[in-house]
Length: 414
Image 1 (cartoon, one colour):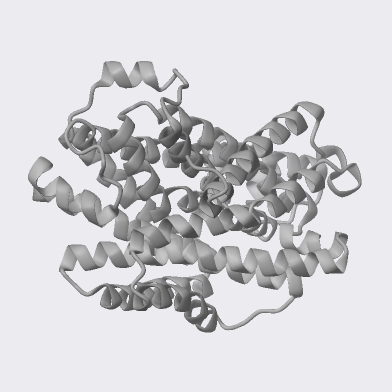
Image 2 (image 1 turned 120 degrees about the horizontal axis):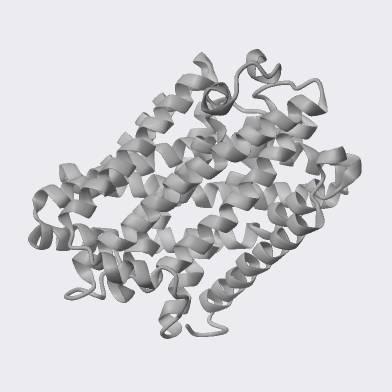
């Protein structure tokens, strides 16, 4: 790191010591909630909604780069700055809402891993949940041995998801010419397509990912000058682009696989369980097994990241930290309650995304506000083009989340 900060190591060689935060955060963009929305998009509309995935990923890149910059420049994470700079009543409201969002996130991630295990090994869902809890807790223990080991473990799980979908692309039929045309042709054929687009974009920029990224970068290195901060920001932006490009390609591959497998003959596939069972006769048992392996890897890694984010949110807002096993146990309880109550697992995944949409405005608005203030960011504050792009991106995401909430409340019907 010192060689990089002193300018003796540049390029990809300079990126290596600082790589990790964006890779960890990228897990939020390929969690089990994305599986559900991407399967629906591909099965019902083929390649028609690929452009939505691209747009969502571009917005995510912008906001994650702002979060990373905030941590690098200020040496504080987003939650800490909220505690220090905002009125106390608002801080407590943001803390409660953010904690609930972290728990809602964990429902989707935890259930996703459990669903994958139960289908892969023919286990009861509750047994799959217990195994998921044990594995994710074991992974979290790696953090006590240094952040690099945990980052490598998470990176390996992301690699499993990516390789799984790379294999699926060779198994499922893909119309590359049609894909190339439709990915750059924005259109929403009907109201159901609007609902799915809302689900894709509204669940892409995750509240916990915005909090977590600033925390991971602020403790990475301690730059002593603006020149060193500038070097780290450039490397951080490069890592964000690379990591989220990989995550975006995985999401595109999910939609393409679902389109190739289901669009022609099973356009109504909407549940993860149904997708697995339908894949067996269509593409063979191997393809279906690879699909489940990717789901399990996604569930394990995203559960770890969700727990890390929840701990950082609590520590930042109220300067309070609890043992990681207590945190893991508490965040598991809603998932067990959902299953014991007999709620459909995939439905619970979708509803968790609705809960996230309630929390999303707080960190998005706070992030843009903090990074645009010269008294906080100094020479690294947002210039007007970045403010404009962030404003448009926030408006798109927040507007679609409002639509999602109104639809969930029955005020409108998509």
